[in-house]
Image (cartoon, rainbow, N blue to C red):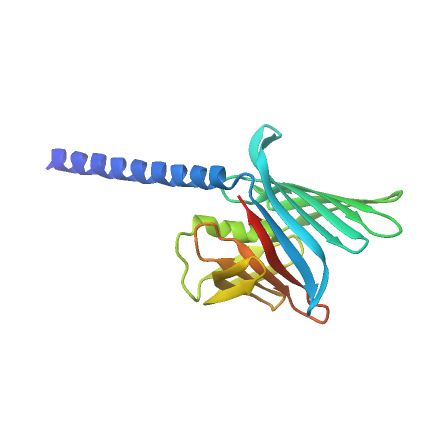
Amino acid sequence: MRKIIIFSLFILFLILSFALLIKKVYQEKIENDFLGESITYDVKFSRLSLGKAKFTYLMKDNLDGKPVNVITFETRVGRFTDQERIYCDPNNFLPLRVERNVSTWPTPEKITENYDQDNFTVAITKLKGNKKEESLIKKGGKIHNAILLPYHLRHNPKLNVGWTFIAELPTQQFKIELIAIEDVNVPAGTFKCYHFTSVPKKFEIWVTTDERRIPVKIKGMGNFGYILVMKEYKR
């Protein structure tokens, strides 16, 4: 009897080890497959085209001795430019550092966010002209980045309508809910997408159902709601 128990435990150990190995290989495949990915969006207000936005899954790097993925997001609308360089954990896409340059007239602004995901804090430094502001925000759990949220889905092989996720951003918390699966037309083509909405209602997002999980359309809600629609995808 004792030998049977030991043998059963050994088999269980092998199964768990194999499952963890498969998960690690799958995550590494995702990371390597999408390096160099870029997504270009048209930024619109109603039917009016306002500018462009571009997401780039740039490269692997190191930050304070830790491996990170580097992702950039740039928005250009008229004379306004917002450039973000995001260093994130390659395993879960949680932000570790964000460097942001906002070009607004008459004074540009530089913002740096340093995340301590173990202690659920983010230290924010803002430089605008000769003025410097520093703040520390404490949250109740891991802190997300709005731009990276769709990429958490790449570790979820299948999603069903009704699926929910709590997004803890530095200054807000949202519940994100999958409300439908539908075809979406954008300048880059027609895609079958998961349709997510936020609670409270601040945005909607459509993400492809294939393994790429591409955010093809993003819609802000409110009086000055914007729409980002995918114009081009490269990988």
